Length: 241
Image 1 (cartoon, helix red, strand yellow):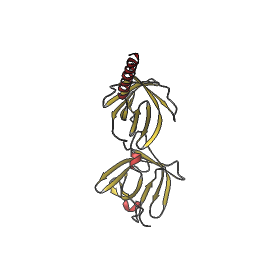
Image 2 (cartoon, rainbow, N blue to C red):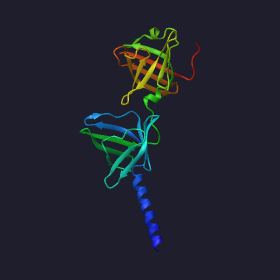
Image 3 (cartoon, rainbow, N blue to C red):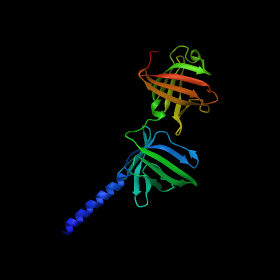
Image 4 (cartoon, rainbow, N blue to C red):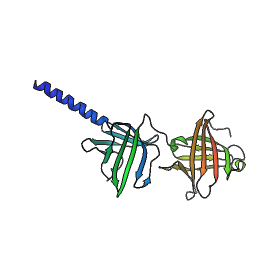
């Protein structure tokens, strides 16, 4: 009889523990982050919580792994990272666990931090993911004036954005190489040309995906490219030289 009662107690505890954990377990996407009065929402930020194991990333890039502890009594969530330094700000207070939305709050350097999340079914794509690949220049504008002939006189201008964060621009007469990276909180890409690292070209990213194929529009934000708009279409192979 004692053994049966003990067995039932263990099963009950397992069910309760599983139910508690299920309140925060799942795949979550960060929809908004505010630090004090400032919004600082990261691009395509996601986190997966699964039986005290946590993984997170931005878009297709997974960059953090570790564990987490959810304290139901205190309604707090504490993270421990395996491959990155643990922060010094402690646990998040959790609101609305177990629903399709969740909110974390805590103080960081005297500022109230609020993280809003919603359940998701898959990894969101970031601008960094969307601009990968080979692109052919279709049109160039400056202050709404067509300057395509200046950018692309031989109609062979291509831009190859590599996952290694290298890029190669082939103007048809010259090849320009360098590094690129995307802003963590805004759809902006920056190009650092090899040999001209002090000159950073910053562009606002706009992507599309229609029956005509994938499209990319870059709008200049730097002093040297303001009012310039470059329109590209995606290629699945390199054009003939």
